[in-house]
Length: 339
Picture 1: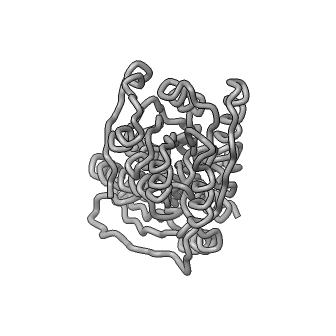
Picture 2: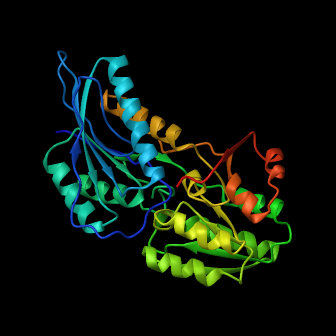
């Protein structure tokens, strides 16, 4: 009997509540070299000495820049690994549009179709695929994906304290911080609790505002105007999906947005310190290949962070001197807003 293994690549951010009626499935061409994607449930294949050929389902929770970056990195690495190691890979992409029902339907379908591997991208997708295969994830423990013998993967867990250290280094006089996130995002639970503890220890006030749709998040962001000097958002997909509009609200009000991923910053947020998502996707793909080729199921791997990304357009608009960041990290990447 074939076994399922989960390579649950944890993501970051998650995304806005979108109206979805179904999955988008776009099969990639099978060229004999691999094609695949990031993070998740794998089923140990039965292969012969003559050929090793794997069919993989890539299940992306929803569309946004960080998740797209992981998916593309996984596909590139699987293609490279197939060419280097002499096996064949074909894959089919599914998109859950951030809808739990759609993701569960996809999970039932891919398990029924006996894919050799299921690679979900982002916490909710991973949870649904693990449930289907057993039959988050920046924070696998909070997402309920640890302690399972058939689940492993990568994590982009935030160093929340470091991001808030950056905030105080750039804005030492900050008195009140907004905490903007979705209370439906498993990725946000732990870093928000860490942020509250940190701010309480520093004697800094905070205001929590949440939402579970784009409209709710924009209303929450607007409600912070005039009340806070800075806002912190972890790797929250709901906020990320509308970050361009959030950044516009906050930047016009002179409020710096400290976030959990570089995709926020490219959309207009001020800064972040986190992992490189291309590296996360590549590492996840390598884990999946090792399992598919008969290797042991590895432990969860937490990706190294320490890369500070700054939006120079936003820094100029806010009048913030971020040169202090160069004393806090080996790598400071400067970007401008992507329209």
